[in-house]
Length: 605
Image (cartoon, rainbow, N blue to C red; front, side, top):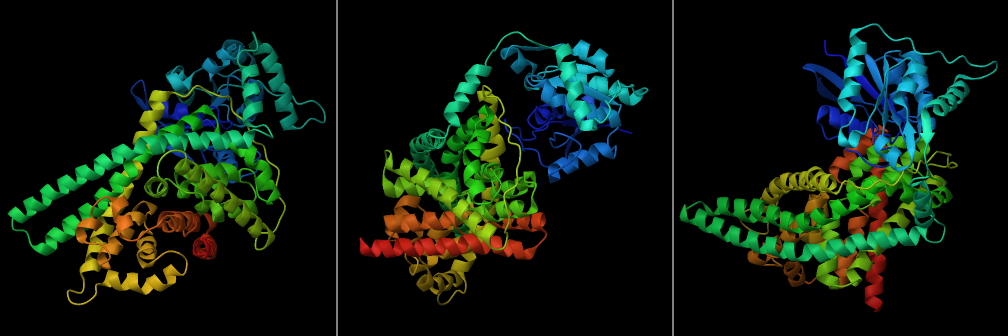
C-alpha cells in the first residue's frame, strides 16, 4: 500500500511550499498565517515509489482552539499517517520546536525538516541539523523549500521510517509540577542553545524599522491606502489600451464569423443565438476582465508574497475589536478580494463561532475579483484619466471596509452579541518576492482560472439572454418585460430595470453583470443590436448613463447579494439556510439605501 506522510508544523513555515515541491501540485502558498484551512493531499515519487503527502493546517500545539487547529490535532492524535514530517522555521527554531516535541511524543515515526535556511542565513542564524538530530534521536533535514533544497532528502528519510523500526525519540523528562507544554518550551530552549548559532543581526533590525513604518499608529493606515492607490493607478493606466484593442479585435472577428455563417446560409435564429448571444456576451466579458486582472493580480500577489497582508490585519485589528469582532477577520477580508467563497472558507481560522459568523455574513461586502473589472472600467469611462478614478477606487475600497466594520458592529449588537476574543497574530518576515513565479502563478492560477470560469458562465448566460430577448416571437420579449417590470423600482434608487435584471441574471458570477446589463438595454429597445454588441463604454453612454448612474451601479456592485458559489459556500460553512438568506439580504438592503441617498443627492445638485 502507498504510505501516507503528514506535513505538520506552525503556520507560515513553508509546509505548502514543500508540499508543492514534493507533489508537483499548486496548492496556494502565501507569506501569511492562516492560509491553509483544510487537509490537502497529493502524490510524490521517491526513488520510484509513490508516497501520499498530506498538507495539514498550521497549528502551534496539539491543544486546538480553532477548526483548522482541530483538524491538524486530530490528524496527528488519531495516527492517520504512517509517518510525519514536522516542518520547522529555521529563522525561529525556538518557536517551532515545542509542537515538534509534542508530535514526537505521540508519533515516533517523525522526521524534522528545518526549512527557510536561506532566510535564516540572511538573518545571521545558523542551525546545526546534526546536533539537533543527535539530541532528539530522530532524523533532522535542513531545507529551503522555495528552491527545492532538502525536499527529496526529507521524503527519503520519512520513507525509510515507514519501512523500518520506529526510532526512539529522546524523552522530555518533565520536572515536578511542570505541564507537558511547559516541558516542551523548556526543552526547546535547551535545544536551541545547543544547535542554533547567531552570527549577527542580519536583516532583523531593518525589518523592525520597516514594521514601525507599515504598522505604526500614525502612518500604518495612510501607507496602506497609498499602496492600494498605487496598485489601482498602475492597473487603470495599463488596462485601458489593451481593453480597447480587445474590443476592436473581437468586433472584427465577430463580423467575419457572422459573414461566414451568412455565407453558409445558417438560419437567422442560429446566427443570433451564436453571435448576439454566446459570442457577444463572452467577448464583452473577456475584453472587460482580462486586461485589469492581468495587471491587478500580479501586483496584489507581490504584496502577498512580500508578507504585507498580515500587516494589513495588524493595522485593522483595533477597528474590528471596537466592533466586537475578531481581528482575524481582516485576513478573511483580504481573501475576499480574491474570491468571496474563499474568504468565507477562510473564516475557519476564527476560533469563536459568533465572530466566525460575523466574518462570514459580511465577507460579500468585500469586492471580489469578479467585481473589480467592472468597477475599474466604469471609473475609466465616466471619471476620465489621471488620479480621479484612482482616488475613486481607493474610496470605494475604503467604503466597503467601513461597511464591513459597520455591519459587523450591527450584528455584534443584535443577533450575534458578545465580546471580541483574544488571538495571536504572527507577523512573518519580509521576503523578497519571486517575481517570475508570482507573475506565472497570478496569471495562470488566478487570472486565467477566473477568466475561464467567467467565460464558462458567460456563454450559457448569453444564450439564455438571447432566448429571453427573442421569445415569444410576437410581442414584447420575456427579457424586455423583465426590464420594464423592474424599471420603476430601479429608478427609485438611481438604477433602472436593465441594471437590476443584470444583477439578477448575473447571480452565477459577478463577472457577467455589466455585460448582461448592456444586453438588457438592447432587448428593451434602448440600444440597437450593433450598439449592444459594441464597445462597453459607448453603449452605456448611449443608454443614458451619467456619472451618478455609474456611481450608483458601483455602490450596488459593492453591496448586493453574493454570487451563487459564495451563497452555497456560506450554506456549507454555517449549515443553515437562515444565515445564508441573511448574508444575501444584509448587503442588498444597505446597497439600496445608499443608492437612494445618492439619487437624492443627485436631485439636489
